[in-house]
Image (tube, rainbow, N blue to C red; front, top):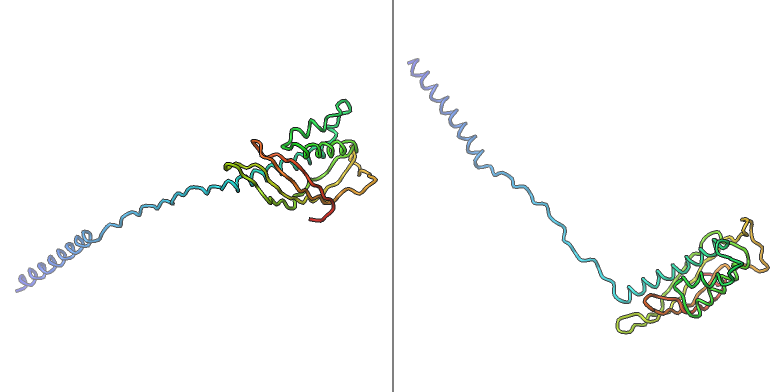
Length: 201
């Protein structure tokens, strides 16, 4: 009888181990392997394009800032440009700027008068506002434009060539308003300037 019990017990243990092995194998087969996620790619979109009007306005704005920067630079470094041997030094200087017609003559006179004062500027002109009020087109190309700017000169100091405060018989302007017309000849060129002084921006 004891031998039968041991045999029966052994059979039960063997069946239990076989069941456990089969259970492990089944779970290994039935458990799905997670698939690697494919990284998503961002959607490529074309950059926005500017309209002809927007492009013309951007180019005019850049040209105006170029003129003001050149005008400032000429006054900051007056002694580098003024030449007693060349009375036309102001004409030569201004003719390299994107200006023509009356605006060129106006800026040449302003630059020559500044040179005659033997003064230099410390600081830069602040463009407080610049509004482009009109751009005319012909065959999708800009032809003329009008704009108005207010320049703040309150942060500028004026000194002589020795760096001492310059003395004037008049009070230098603190603000300037430019009413401008422009012509497009391969690029924008400033044509006229209507000047108003000391109206705060």
